[in-house]
Image (tube, rainbow, N blue to C red; front, side, top):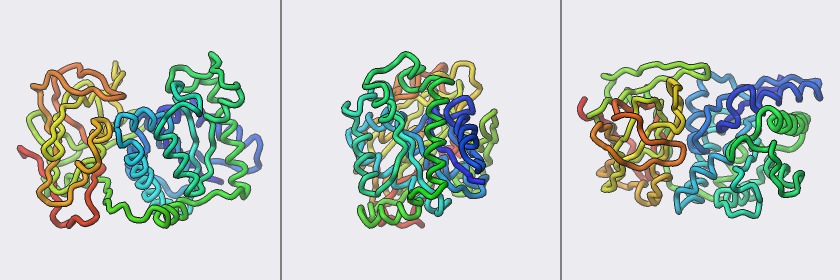
Length: 377
């Protein structure tokens, strides 16, 4: 039995997409069996994928292959930053490092999709350029679905290809995509040379060295511990997953001293609204309401304020303990920034339900000086 862990965006969510066809086709062409472990939650980026990998790992007993799919989401997320390539490289570093610690012997298999706007490989898309460069240097073999579709359809976009600019048509195209991936997985399982994440992580450091950056993922439960254990998490569940959240009510501020929240992972619902984010002296009001919340009770979502607000990395990588960053939940903010994947709030903010925070600090920082607090308690 080969265990395949799937980590990706909304194209990878659910059994009606391409993931549902991988196992069926693989077992039709192979004597082997596949176990698919799909932890995709939609949206996000490579950065949030790394956080999701940590979230879900405690319930996963190893895997043989890590199938990684974030091409469309990365294109939409990182393009909002002038420093898009640097942020993407750091994100990929964290994903690879995380996977190497959790599943060192798993083979790393990226699946490449393309947003309709960047369907042509000749269209300018900085993350795609950076990803291709890094994959070449690290000798990472990918399953390039986007390139294959472009060649097969000779640069045209047939009506049955996309359901919308960011999603392939279900079930027709997803059936085809799942079958192609299954064919490649059959070769990989059969002995085709594919690097493990631990070898890729080692090669990364050989080529790029140390970025002098510390990245940590703090779950809601870990944050509660750092707050002195006087706060509890709340559990929410839907058909896809169960999450523990730390609820920050309106009028309260979650602040970080000596390090920065590079990524906020949270439960978005209709009770969420604008939140004031602070990075040093810079403050920005942001919507935390998922675009398309509609009648959904809630969704697992994430937001990198520095990337989306185009804050240079130098502003969010502090080197001293006096640096303060924070999220302040306020019900008096009437206008703010609405980034990709978000919408105008439906009401005033009642809370911010935090699933986890990916934090960033200088490698020279003293861990003992890092602290988190909620004001008021």
